[in-house]
Image 1 (cartoon, rainbow, N blue to C red):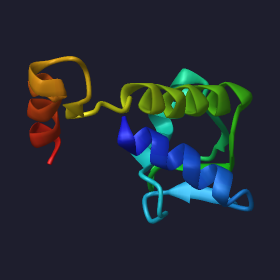
Image 2: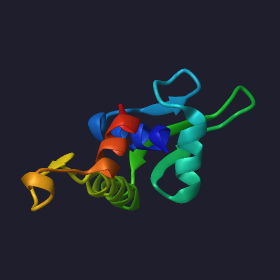
Image 3: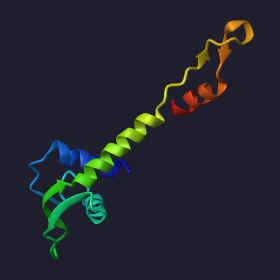
Image 4: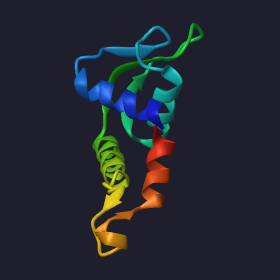
Length: 106
């Protein structure tokens, strides 16, 4: 999934890319998968020598997919407070679930 996002972001950041092949900065296999899903567009110039796509561009559907993945990551990263000030024992509580998740992420 990260490879797909990086290819789409690369196409947005570099709109003047003329072609994609095995020697490009983008992974050609990932690019071909994105074409099959309709997230990018490019003229197929494949030959016996290898895969090549001319004028690769991200489609509107690709931009929407990328934006939805960015929104998912922000929703998943909700802020949890490890120490909670609630009427617990002497006014101080400890959220052990948040503490456990925090240690797992580190």
